[in-house]
Every structure is written in C-alpha cells, then in structure tokens.
Length: 144
Image (cartoon, rainbow, N blue to C red; front, side, top):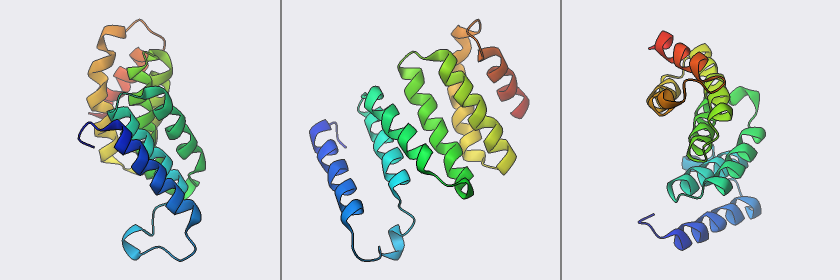
C-alpha cells in the first residue's frame, strides 16, 4: 500500500468490481476468493490505513457471508474485527468477539487465530475492569 490510501481504495474497488462482474471461472490460484474474502481483506487493508469504521463494516459484512464450512477463516476474520473494534475503543464489544474467536479457534484447531488473539491480549491489560476483559484474559492465559 505504501501509504497511498487513495490508490489502495481504487484497487479495492477495482477488485470488488472484477469479482462481481466475472463471467468466467477464476484461475486456480484465486478460485477460493469469494465476496466474503474480498470484504474482509478490504477491511484488513482499511485497518492498516487507520479507517477503522469502514474497516469494521467490511469485516462484519464478510463474516456474515461466510458459510459454516469455513469456520477457520471465520476465526481469523473475527480476529480482524477485534482489532478494528479495539482501535475504535470498543473494549467490551471487542473482548466479547475476541473470546468468541478464541473459543472457535481452539475448537477447530486454528493456531494462527489463537496467536492473533493472544497477541492482542496485552491491549486489554489496562482495561481489566471492563465487562468481558477478565474472562478473555483468563481464557488467553489458559490456552497459552
């Protein structure tokens, strides 16, 4: 992205347009890409640009589009949602989503997601009195 927010948004819009208007089967290297993946990946980019509000919208939209068969992806996407919520100061909401993602990741064996949530745990330390934070931190310590 090189810090060029306008170029990033232009490329994200072009990718969305290409995915929505494709008439042929995608090449094998991107056959897994779906509207859910694109929405969440766009949200991830927007987090990096500091645009947490639009990022959160994209991520929530993408998570809602995921089929149950993709729970491992769901756990990772929820971790992205947590990061966006944290950056917006939504501590209680992010703690609840983080706990959900952590439990899901442990249940299905998704160590990448467990690491993502565990790495975010330190951001909750100053907020131990906020609803859900102690439970999250306890679960992180138990899973570590």
